[in-house]
Image (cartoon, rainbow, N blue to C red; front, side, top):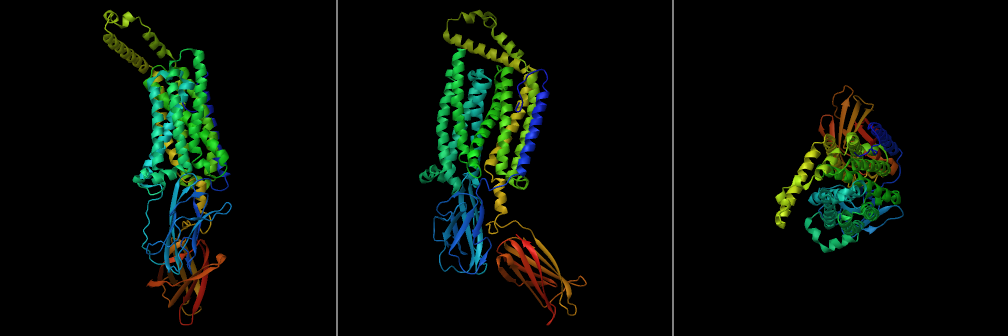
Length: 640
């Protein structure tokens, strides 16, 4: 039912094929545009650098530690903590200093003077400009690495039980918005008679209640979600006040105010509008409700657009209205689909004209979704590697696949729509017009007892409803359409869950920048084990052989180094002395000496070898085979 045009003739095949062709073209355009993506990160701030760098070994204690981010962040007290090897605070500031210049976002904390040698841990936590909490940790060493007793929590910011409940509320909020807006639009645009149907009223009201309750939960949990992760802090008034001063907090409060206006809209839609019988007056009221409801729905959608992914990064002034359109199209399509499902299963009165009008609305919604989705995909992903190599890109592929499945099921719904007639409804209406004497005993109509008359009226209503249900269930076209729409709704529930996950996932463009950015990135650069093979000849007797070197994991920070020496016969070869040195000539770092320990014949090892930053390192190996025969060989290896 989703991506189909209104039925216009006896052939239901031509238009679904055209819709399928349009979908294929749009999907191709999406992935084509992804290839052309370039530019800065678009959302979810990421740590792009630090000074000192992760794993760095510095000769003297620095005066401060600075962190650089891909975009603006919000910080508070203790957002950056520097801990010495014993776990005590080594920084002097509770609130980080803003050291940003131009487009560079940088924060720092000063360190105590006279810090002893050893390994220091930097733990940080902040709130991205798109409202999501971010956190991380790394180490650096003064003088030489040492053991540390610091035990950082494994739970990331926004995780734990509070994060789970917050994510559930986020999903419920999207679901409530879809039912509220989509259900109301279905009544006004597709089936005005639905305003008097109790199941339709319940659907829209439950959507309002769900969205309101979810918004309240998110507002209360916002402080622990971005901070301590403890449910008790939900009732911390100071924390709640600090939330209200933030962009996400203001958006949630604005949503609650708009939901008050939505409650008034619902009261008029299912009250005054449902009772209005004059067609001209009803038409005028329909226009007023459509305008007013559209303004409220747009405002509610804007509370997401102005506080999450669309509000930050490149082209935010374009991305926010595009995001609003995307959300409204989702609500019109999926909310209308839920309304149609309720109407087909719970009300016998919906006619084929209403079903076909929804088909037109769904088709227009899918066109809008495709256009806005293309733009959002380019903005948040930007490249093939980000599409296939990041969690955001993989979720986006899953979302596109679910939409394709949804449209495939909709094709079958469209075929049932083409066969749908109003014969069943006409039969129901005829049954309702039976003479009273045929449907009610004479004694009942003459019964002067009001209580008895009310009881008989209820019995008549139940009998009529039973007849309608029997006639409705006997219609094979409606039964087929109900099953098809039910399948669409099941896929739509999963699609909405994936969409919710996308809103809380770091966009692929940002993740790629963080992973492949500056050499001083705080997270260890992605690397792999380094394997080298270097022949040597000291010039003396039995002076020829081969050195094999393995460095694992082959990235910045601590590494394990193994060296094997094989003689010219391929057998393990012992030598009196073996030394290594690492030099990063591009940064004037080194040579950093490494003296491995002998483990077995022809096998040496060194643990905790520190690689301070990624780059093309030169590895010098000195092999001495006798008192006078010695040679130094070297080879370059990319580490990190």
